[in-house]
Length: 432
Ligand SMILES: Cc1cc2nc3c(=O)[nH]c(=O)nc-3n(C[C@H](O)[C@H](O)[C@H](O)COP(=O)(O)OP(=O)(O)OC[C@H]3O[C@@H](n4cnc5c(N)ncnc54)[C@H](O)[C@@H]3O)c2cc1C
Image (tube, rainbow, N blue to C red):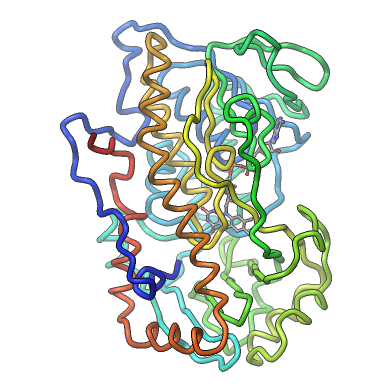
């Protein structure tokens, strides 16, 4: 979110690629090779999160049949707010999911970056009409459950998609990489396996062994509260980013404006919390002493919080092996400090479907092409998200210098540093 990072570190990331002659079209339905009679695939997907459901819809739109295996008995309602940049909204529009989701989203007018101690606003990044015109789609925020619902509704309307819940995938059939093993001992055969089973993917150990989550040294406390609990002094139409020494807090309204989503990221030894534990209000308040009164009031609102150990995956290559391929957090989990994990999962889905087209004639080449397009972009998201933690959590003179830079740099210049993320054409093939 905070583009000043590159300015402070005087870094210059890769610029947007110009279309190469062999440009990839990001929307799945753009390549309907099934019309040419090339054989369709039966595809198995492990995991019905954002990546799994979006992949199912995208590949089914190209004429493949899909079975999705989800370990949970119900499609998960855990998780809280998600910021959906224009790159995420664009894929949802292309998949036909946006109509079911739009009414549940909120349309923030701006991102306000504030000093958590003084309460002073340091910068504001406008997200209104001119932002949407510039990037071709709007910036929205949603509850993850609403996104999952909209994806599941869209999937349920496609007779080529079957979702099997309460079915945990434990690995692959030994010696036969097209057979998925379930916890009950069944083997499910398919032409292609898409591993969308999240940061702690069981299938990644087959595809890319040795790539385990690395902890970031932060605990992320997440809570939802009624929207009416937002202190009067704060702007209902903003995504807030509060910067504190060793911590930051993000909050915004979700669920059509009915609920308030709050995430506090605090530098803390990871083993205090585990992966998804209940935490108390005091855990959060004690870790954020001396914050400005409006923020203190906000953090005092939720009675309980869920604590999540901050972790990501160090970028790696070789996302596919045999007939299995990784998507979403299973391939490139990032810390949520650019708010792009779900967006990257959606882009993966559209890109993978476009690479596969409607055919199964050269699967290996299609999977290699998908990785070639997606790996550099997602690696940059992982790395810049991690770097943002260092900037957000600065202390002392460094924090003062950061705040000064934020106050002096116009929001429009900061937005320019994010343009590569929101680009209308992220899934272009890198030039050789
Ligand atoms: C605090 C926080 C804030 C965030 N904010 C944003 C944001 O603002 N914007 C954004 O774009 N992203 C955000 N993210 C990131 C985003 O939530 C993730 O990147 C995204 O949900 C990843 O989706 P996924 O489908 O790849 O993985 P997951 O959401 O982890 O889904 C994996 C699915 O697979 C299932 N599964 C796992 N193992 C198995 C198995 N063995 N067999 C069968 N099923 C299995 C799970 O039950 C789950 O349903 C945030 C993350 C956090 C923690």
